[in-house]
Amino acid sequence: MSVAFNSDVSLTVEIGFDSNPLDVSQSYTDVSAYVRNIETNRGRQHALDEFQTGTCSIVLSNLDDRFNPLNTSSPYYDAVTGETKVKPFKKVRISAVYDGTTYRLYTGFITGYPESFGGQGSDSTVRVQAVDLFKLLNLNTIGSRGWLLGNTSRSLVGSARLGYADEQELSSARASRLLSAFGIPSADTTISTGDLQVQAGVPATTNLLTALREVETAEQGQFFIGANGNATFRDRNYKRTQQFASNATFGNGVGELPFSDVITNFDETRIVNIVSVTRNGGTEQIVQNNNSIDEYGARQNSLTDTLNVSDSDALEIANQRLATFEGTSPRVEGLVVNPVGNTSLWTQALGREVGDKITVKIPTPASTTMEFGVHIESIRHTIDANNKTWSWNLSTSAGAESASWVIGSSRLGQDTNLAW
Image (cartoon, rainbow, N blue to C red; front, top):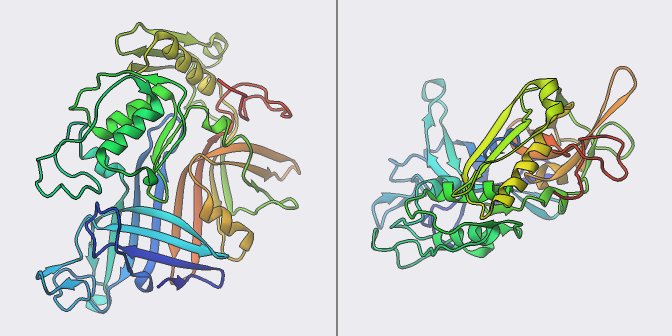
């Protein structure tokens, strides 16, 4: 059963003790009543970075020793098999319900159960540590033998290869087929139609996560694991189509949502004014912004052996990266929101996803307001179930990621341009 975090929100933590980690249909056990605090972290710090494996830490009360794998009296001990169910790699998911809607905050796989004994044994807690699907993808290659997600014929480990056949295709089709070959059902993926083709001929020895990241690079899209556990692939124009409009405005004006803290920055660390892209089998495509070089010095970023099928496509993504990073402007680097006590904040804190666009308006002591359109790059929840505190922390990138004027906007380089 879920437990009331406060009068507005109920919180649920479930572990698949009675299922194998790769079963399509999971039988979950609700451990919400034992939760003391939770921290989840997903995404990346900046648009130049790779998306990282999403992590989670859940501290559970273990006063009755139920989460001790050596306790044969635990409700999670299987007397028939003589084994504990408290094992690494069990699936875990965290949910919250607000106003009748269930929001998934994290889905992943448990890596360990370190136990602490405070007060010289008067207290006991287990810190459940988990990672998302990136971990599984990183453990396999395109030609792997072994586990196939959801495949009941995997009893003979090493007897099956991933059923992947390589061909030139659209980036999104490649991502879909790689995930499908691994056994991930389409219901557990969220994939938008790509814009660019990718080459055939990827070696079977290629790490599966690497293969998916190579597709991400060739498209200049995004690949990450969503809060619901879905493998998510977004095309290069996602922010300019599905996320063109802002989902919420944070500030202190009428109708705006309050925030607790905000960090802005105006620096030179993420400027790129020379971009070189060389596709596999192609010639180097290089573009540069001379004005930016004059202002900030030469700053090069190179991509090599990309899966693009033509030099013109390689040139296109070089131009995209240059337009994204050739300049600098003040930006929101982090936003902290405490939703407790303000019901208007819960749908945002629980429902926003990586890539979503929001607006941040920052009042200054000089009675002016700075306004930023930004996209969410990382999301962290820090929840204390005992003291009823909840912090929602975001890192963001400029909503523009370009230096183009936008209809209806008077700011250069702060909003989405119309297309690449």
